[in-house]
Length: 283
Image: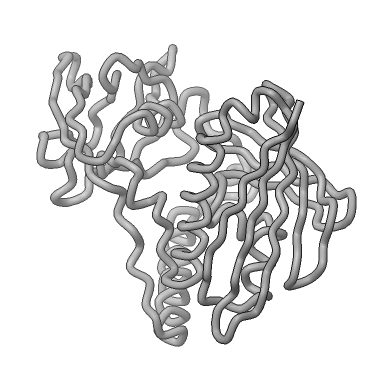
């Protein structure tokens, strides 16, 4: 059976070294492509990418020419069809001419070639956005309630407990309060903080959705119009950014010192009680 080849091109105003790093570094891959990445950027080294919705792609590097070319295989963890991804970089004045070639002989991959092309076009647009402006477009498209949550402190861990509600957020305007326990988003029942992120991934910004929640033993409902996740306001001046980060570390260390004041080292190392929230998630 004849294979299928797709060729995608972009002009990205960034250095070849930065673009090359974006496809050979795990942290950089998470900034524009996936939610989790593990890479071994060497010939035969593995590359693994995973998304919060459960999709995973894995393969091996087949070519590495610093700042000029990267090639690797990728296959899904379900259908097993393998595709070859080749990225060529050419320095063009102050920008990089990027050519990405996708090719496969797998029947399943060929059938979904249009979806693969759309997915990679979206990814490359985001790569250009991240490198040129620092803006991750996925955040703009990610729906949010404007709350911080943790697992509910119940025996069956049903729902997620609201820790805080941001001012003028969709949840705040709908009357959601700290201490409420969200039970469902539409028909999607919630159990653990990860379940809320999963439920929202199936929605779109601007979509109105029914939220079921509990307060003081009563079961309530609210219809909320989802907003986009707020992008962090990062100063362009690196000295201002460094000052803000240093100030935040000072505040965190001060609060941590106060929280542990008078606490022995053995007690501080104890695990949280069963059912107690160990972390919070903004959603």
